[in-house]
Length: 434
Image (cartoon, rainbow, N blue to C red; front, side, top):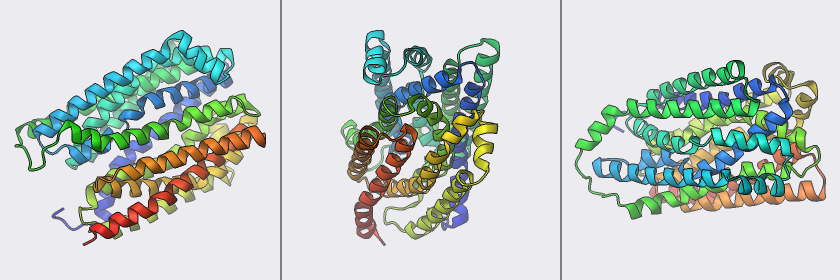
């Protein structure tokens, strides 16, 4: 970058991206608050959580398209080739979603395998149909958002999220108040509507960027489909493995002690923790943009990351260990007193997770910048494997309450992931340092 990098410049670049993730994070509490105030909240919160978990695993292959678009699209040829790659990927994940929705397949997964109550399974199936367009629109949106980030138009990304949040609120309230839909359907309708509208807005906001790219000549490094696959495959596999965590946790919770309560509070707990994780998730693209091929801005980015880690963890600790817990879960989220108290211990266990997410984003940004994406996949395999093992032991052998077991398992897995990446990140920093 021609202009000298400072903490202020990092902040100015980062905060629109952070605002985007924060607004997306607020979707969860908003939707959960609506569902909690509609009839049969336990069943509908559980069904919404399960449907969202299914949609997440289908969405996984395209979630890293934001990083890929930011890192790879430099001229007309790279734009066209990556766009075709996105369309092909979107078609595959939509087909997968349709296969899951086949009744025999779905009810085998939901009832026979996950052991969900029949009522929860029926509500989940309906919600998934409403979520059918959601994964592909995520891929489309993230591709164009990557172009905005690469061209330092991060505020437009935030504008798109405002549009998404507004349309989601309108759709959610309409589903609840006008169409009187079950809570799980209201949540799915809000998500699908919001993402679809934002995807269209993102395309419109990149109009001039795309026009400029189409006029640019081929760069020295020509992007091929083979190089796209080689770069993106580890990232997609990482997302697939990472997002498998939610369905896996849902599977174990269905067989745990106090299963229905655990399934009901999990979406609400996840929504709260995700608010503070969102500050770190946006840091990955910041690192990719500013790190430099020779890591010339590593120390400054590290300083920013440490400040961010202190802020996000301190904020969640404040909620988990003070009366703000009751304010959030009982008054704002609309949970009854039983579920509010039930959520207390899991939230406290997860209080360090936002800081660990900041660290992970910074570690990944260094490896993506130097196109060393393999260790990212390996770290995720270790994380998910330890989460699965911890859940199995805590629930099957120690008979822990499901939500508490899930919180501890998540912390064990993420700790191992961060520790594993220390070595490859350290090697990348030393190898490319100025």
